[in-house]
Length: 486
Image (cartoon, rainbow, N blue to C red; front, top):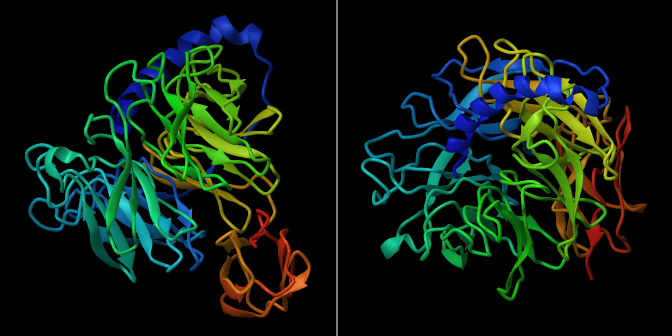
């Protein structure tokens, strides 16, 4: 099922939430009061609408995102916004007949190690075999505001190279990008692909499209990379019970279905997996669980799954989480639900500890404040959370919001691992005047590029641990340990 179909299903979920409230009140503990997020931007159509994707912070300190529809040509937009709310369109998709630059970017963009933005479009491109005037989707690159199409899906006969990509790209340690297509492949069930920064694509796995296929069907979200080089991900349906799967693909090409959801432990994992600092993977399911409103789960690399929370749709905990979780600087996981929350049922922002302690930290209040946050949140290096909503705002086309939950500023190294001498970009806030950069206590030479970016190299003698940056006003630590490889 595509994320488009899920948007319609979400409406039905919202209607069902109210009916369940009376029956479940006695079974659920009350959640502490939460905040209403601050609206930074309300979409009006010409700047985009139908936001299925979240945001990403780049090295210039700004947040970038995509709208799947709207813009000058109604093919969607790529935009950027500052944390203070200054908004700008970077690219309007579908600028000419049949949309050779792609249309309907439903996934978030990824900043590559070269500083360019990489992303996918669900439709458009050079190949029209997916339907009249539709196109089968693309991979694109944006450098200094200029878009280049790197790959057109369905370039091979029978679309064996896949079609309709809905997932963000993930750049591996080898410099290549890894992603999924929701459709296409020899069996029509989607693919996993590898793409060089120059645009050479190789299909590395194809899913089965028949009900009951053990490997699943319809991967819709980004892959996660384990320390051993294996890829981990989810499919929306398929598996032993046709409720979705968790899978892994080893570097040698061996595919393993780690878990088939059965409803009781969740069903339809639309979001991707997050590799936690404890080495386990964390994710959500849109439905299933104890009350059939979705779950938060933990799964080991060996496939042992634990349900951490079953959503009830009442008392503030929300219903139907859709986006991928993040792990914030407090060690907790943060995510969103598209429904439930307060009496309006417009969705929530929640946190949950690795041990399963759940708290609702934000809820949406309808039209002006936005509603139905389909994507997860991102933590900016200023400590605050940022995200998008599918609906709301004055025109009803969605919003961009911020939420402060008391998390402290931090710095983010990119990449997060490397040998001595490897170049590292450090992303942060208010970095001007930095006096020291250390890797687990070992001093490094560095250059302050801007208030949001430092360039450095892994120093001789560095060991795995925290990257620390000392500025005139604060000492900032990295959100994840930097791994020094042999």
